[in-house]
Amino acid sequence: MTRSVLCAVDISNGKIDGPVLQKAAALADLEGAQLDVVSVLPDFGESWVSGFFQADFHEKALAEAQKQLTELCASTLGSERNEKIRHVVATGTAYQEILRTAESAGSDLIVIGAHKPDFKDYLLGPNAARVVRHSTVSVYVVR
Image (cartoon, rainbow, N blue to C red; front, side, top):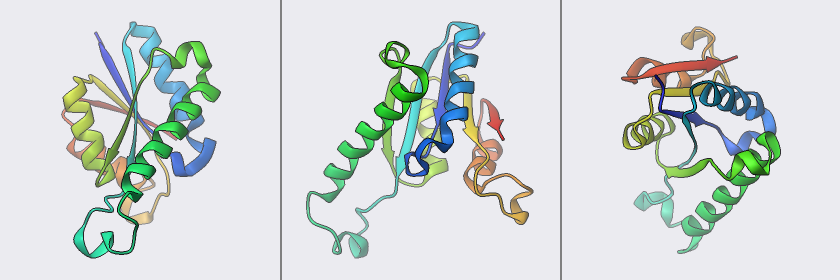
């Protein structure tokens, strides 16, 4: 039985992850599971990178990402369903943060989209491929 579903979306893709979010919600609803949605921002805190940004840039980016993630969930699934979702904005390498979030949330299933495929990834996006390869729980890839 699935108790928790983690859906990974990229808010920079606009509404392209809508079908991924819808599939994750449907799978969570089938099992009566908690739905968590995560989006990952790049790490601007590296010493050589951070010098190019204002001191409070990261905090503003986190707040804006949280707003966009909440809006994406509400516009895709409706405001009533959105109230029951745990929204997570992480910072770092996408696949590592998705796996870390899944572990800390106790997720039994990760739902992710297959974006930006490259031949070397065998028609699966690089982050999705890494999540599939390194996950200790089931991964549902939406194409």
